[in-house]
Image (tube, rainbow, N blue to C red; front, side, top):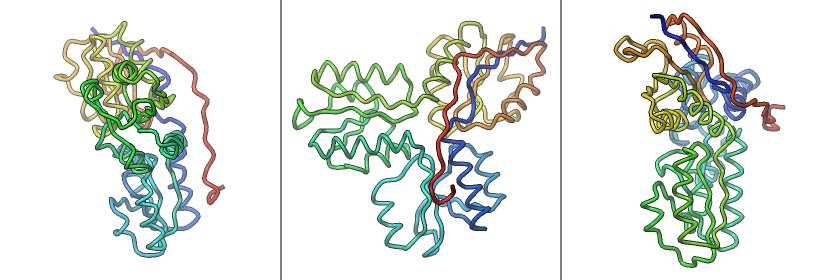
Length: 303
């Protein structure tokens, strides 16, 4: 029996990813090669390699950038320490931080300035969380799980605010916030999970109703892609995270006949279509869950 494929929608690039990629490409056109990019501009190796071929140089630390050259901050954001280092080394900077991540940074500054303890729900080793927690490090505590939320101690339980990484599991984050609400009744909640993360998780939940297997197309180091796989599994469906068609094997697909496909917010659509081709389905349909029409303006340096 040929497999039937259901494509979830929306999928793929969010507005922040489109903006970040456009920033690198426009900077290369306007300022020439090379353009340095701190960290992967978005978490997808296909996107990164494409930009590398065009002349982008990806670096982990600003000391790798020659003094006075142009550097672009990735969509995940950076801490004030990084910004200060760029100033000290007289680097030209274009900031490709997603505006929704910038919003979380501004919230941290606002509440940190009001002497609140900032509980940042997120993965402490993720670059976004590292950048956000660096805004007011002396007042910020990162919490990953309900167990950590149970154990956390704060100087003033009456002055606590919760911020979140933008790419978390909606359901897992709700579990953490439930604990924090109980422990700190006057807590201020700023749920910062972005629209694209929320929408794609809703897509997975819809696909789970009628799929034997869900394939999440995206990179292994992508937070939002990993959360999509976890959401599928939490709804009782086997799920695999694959970066492209080369990872789709007979052993992976097994006996599944109804395959749902979704892709993370940094996954190019051509990888999705390549996976569909590899599966050779007898039927392909698309299930639209929500419309997305979000766009973000470019930095003033590139308008």
